[in-house]
Amino acid sequence: MGLFLGVIGALALGLWLRLMWREAAIRRRFPPVGRIVSVGGRRVHALTLGTGPDLVMIHGSSGQLRDLLPLMTRLAGRFRVTAFDRPGLGFSDSIGAEGVSPAGQARHLARAAAELGIVAPLVLGQSYGGTVALAWGLEVTGPQAARGLVLVSAPSLPWPGQLDWWYRLTATRIGRALAVPLASALVTDGYIEKMMPGLFAPSAAPEGYAARIGATLALPSGALGVNADQVNGLLLHVRSMQGEYGRLALPVEMVHGAHDPIVPLEIHSAPLSRLLPQARLTVLEDAGHMPHHTHLDAVEEAVLRLVA
Image (cartoon, rainbow, N blue to C red; front, side, top):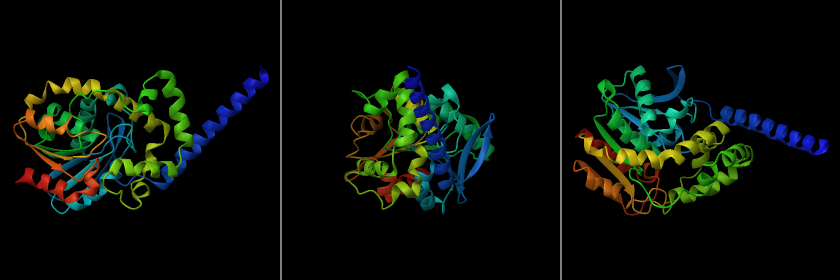
């Protein structure tokens, strides 16, 4: 028994050392690209480009603001564009239980926006970030209230069935405790590269996408655990938000790929466009889940229509 416990202890120590080494290596390779704002003693990582009316951008699950850089660069000639790392992801601190709620994230990021002097922004969200953008429209009042929303591939309504195996596993206490540190320590850059075609299909993933946007910043165990909690809790919050959409009076633009396998058009943006008479839906017949990379023109046009 003593030998067995010794082996288990050695393996646990080895895993912990691997986790610490890997997280440090990832953060050295992909340091913060923006500034750190303090909100209630919690750090929020924000990057601002350009000048003009305020445009806030919010990234999706397993991501951080680097994923939005191509779109930010495209729009920085017309707007002051600010992207945030959502709570617990990238270089933003977790905000605990409040961060499992899109509404809690929206309120926290709006407070960060206030620290940066952002006023009456357009708010654009991609994937999970689109749900946070919807919550921003519903929850945030005063100077940081949104004057329009752009929802790109955004979950907005309850869906049937279950999430994929990773989220089912991490929905349990034991599964999360075991799977998160193991994945954080052992998932390779090559495995992440192999996942990219599924995100972009039927379009091709941009060359070198994972390395350019720092996809491995999703791997530190803190970020993996926070992301699992946020995604596993999303259905409950979307059900609650569904009954509030009638309160949205601001203009809404939606951009959605017809072949999105992750956030299906027919479950989310298509019925939402019928619930919001002021909304305009652009369906991209040859796009999947990532039109903010594969169809930049269409997303830019949606933003400009809101301004017009």
